[in-house]
Each structure stands twice: as C-alpha cells, then as structure tokens.
Length: 130
Image (tube, rainbow, N blue to C red; front, side, top):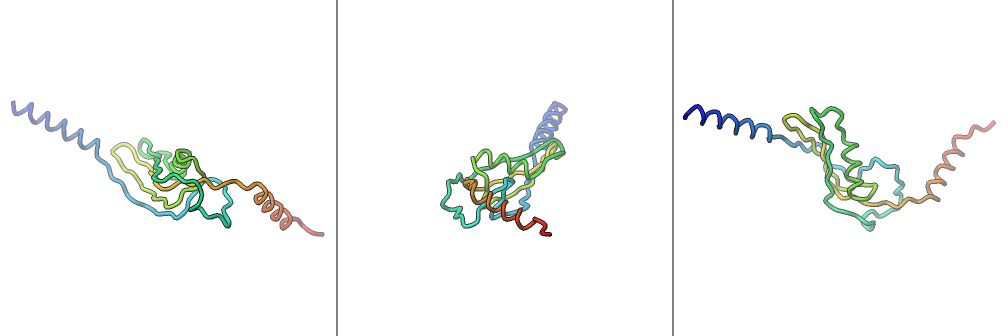
C-alpha cells in the first residue's frame, strides 16, 4: 500500500514540476513599435486605443522566440501600430521559454502627404551636386 502512495506522490510531484515556471520583468517602454510610423506633433492620448492588450511568443526551449514577434501579435490583437506603456516579460517554463508583452495599443493615422514630403526632403539632401 505504501508503494502505491509513493508512486502517486511521485506522479503528483512531476505534474506540479511540469506546470511550474518563472516570469521576469525585463523592461518598461513608454512607446514601442515594429511598424514604420510618423508621429511628430501627434497626441497619442487622443487617438483610438485598446488597453490591456497582451501577447506572447513562447517556443520549445525558447528557440526562435523574440520580442518582435510578441509585439507584432499584440499590435494585431489591438488593431493598432504603436504600443504605449508597454511592459516586457521573459517567460521561462520547463520545456519552453519566450517573451510576453502587455500594454495599450494605439492606432496612429498614416499621413501620406507628410511621409512623402519627408522622403522628398531626404532625396533632395542626398542628391550630389556638380
């Protein structure tokens, strides 16, 4: 009877071990994005936003996991192109590890006339004069 008890106790211990993990806070960002945006003179507090958006990129043994994938998933989930007040975590589990990011996603409008003007200014500045 004692052997069955110890075997059951061993299985419960293994089960709890495989469910355990750690999370480390590795950074706070005021604004972060993987998209090319132009937000000069833009008040992001007045733009449409979705708070509490969270996404992660966790993979087997952490192979190939990176913060950019987690951020891209969060931006897609929030329907925006900029995350403000973001917190980045590193997740470490038994057979997997990766990154988790949480924050407020904002949609910064694309301004075609300003971006094309910026491109034209850069083109003029880089033109070689004889």
